Length: 624
Ligand SMILES: NC(=O)C1=CN([C@@H]2O[C@H](COP(=O)(O)OP(=O)(O)OC[C@H]3O[C@@H](n4cnc5c(N)ncnc54)[C@H](OP(=O)(O)O)[C@@H]3O)[C@@H](O)[C@H]2O)C=CC1
Ligand SMILES: CC(C)CCC[C@@H](C)[C@H]1CC=C2C3=C(CC[C@@]21C)[C@@]1(C)CC[C@H](O)C(C)(C)[C@@H]1CC3
Image (cartoon, helix red, strand yellow):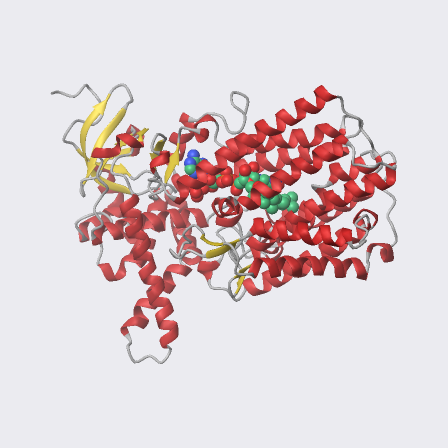
């Protein structure tokens, strides 16, 4: 059969870009599909992929270009020394992989900038891989005294291979969009040594690309701004909500004297609360869940007993109230409690920053290592800071602030009864309490699912999250209930019913989509998910492209936003303050979405573009 007149013909040997990377490999053209405008090509190892014309280069032109760049050890040059583009001697695979990655990057860089770019890449980005090389050297020297260290380092070298193998196994042989049920015929590429190296090269390319993450949150200047603005904003909100007529025009609000802000007793209560949660966290109750594989291939274990923690906390609070403890103290000392939590979050962030200076590079997050002290302090450097098995980031994100949020809401309900002379909390107060309690309990019940979220997988633990978890969540997410204490807003039955329905719809979307992604990430071949379509990526992970994740790119954000709307509606429209959460949340999620988009584009390359072409909207179908 003759192929239609197209640029490359069947049987042509050309260079095909590996999806998601800048690496070009020698491939043979098998066919061209005029409808999809895709070439089916076959790699030397038998892998078949469908590529677009722009991802293919003529072999002749490519070799000429490669030769002229021979000093940067381009793919072309490597080809002349080994049988396949990424094939090198096994011993030096990791280092070579990194060089391959670095060389590949030069492909996309204009010649004038190539040298500097390559130099930067090698200097700045190779530290974990250099360690791997060091591990190899160490393992050769059997008489070295530092046996422990050697073991550790050898371990790491092995892990690179283990991950590679896992990835090769997971890597589907075709780059196509179809139901996974139909995958029967598609054999995964065999895990041969040279393929491990090839995958290591791909991993290195991905790693190198990801490490060059641009600074976020407005960069270094932005970090200064947020460090000052965030605490000031909390202070502003707390002072406002206490006023008879809270309004954004009351700016600046009357500032209380310093001694009114600092309260030793309030400080003590916050410390006690955190310690109480810490004790519940370390109790050997509940499941030990595995986190997602780290860059080293290791999987950390997390004690996911959050539901147990909130139940015990509720019992303890009920017992305290029964014993006559006046929880309205939380309402009357809200500002002091917020200031105490703020101080604790600052101390924690300083500790986190200092300890991150002594942590090995592979334990750092990919984004918080800019070299600028203020930016790194704000963004967080270490990915999973732990004291023995105690995971600080996981604990702070899921326990004191989150459960504290419910405790504060409950205290606000008591304060409302006291202030308004009611026998029971008002309907709006009950709704806000129940809605937010459901949100927190659900988060704790599905605690394992947080292990596949951005914060746990990608973000370092620094001021932003420490402050977010310990101050922002408990002291600003409670604005609606605080507001209702002194601003009653009676609701009609139809309004109440409509709000409840809205909340349930939002919750359904939120829960279903989060669970779908979590189940898929944990076990991509889960038979229960076999009806879903996926796009394979060069990293070995696939992307869901049907089900909830085929409706919009962040269905979980959509559900969360609908719920946020249902939390503000009970407070009515007289003031902007109870709507603060809704406004903040739109900004947070839109920013988070774009952060995630660029991260995924870097990680998954053309597969991500394909996903975005298939699923066109980000959060709201047909709108955004
Ligand atoms: N109440 C609050 O204050 C906040 C609540 N949230 C909620 O927390 C939850 C988690 O949010 P967040 O961590 O931001 O983001 P997600 O849970 O949406 O996680 C994003 C990650 O999911 C993976 N992913 C993206 N698209 C796909 C796909 N098509 N198929 C498979 N995997 C995909 C990617 O990671 P990879 O491919 O590496 O696995 C991506 O980095 C959300 O429900 C959000 O609404 C978030 C922030 C604040
Ligand atoms: C201070 C900054 C402006 C913003 C800080 C952001 C943090 C407050 C949020 C980042 C991601 C979060 C998540 C939850 C709480 C808020 C923070 C920490 C979450 C634990 C709430 C409960 C949910 O069920 C969840 C899905 C588990 C959430 C995960 C993300």
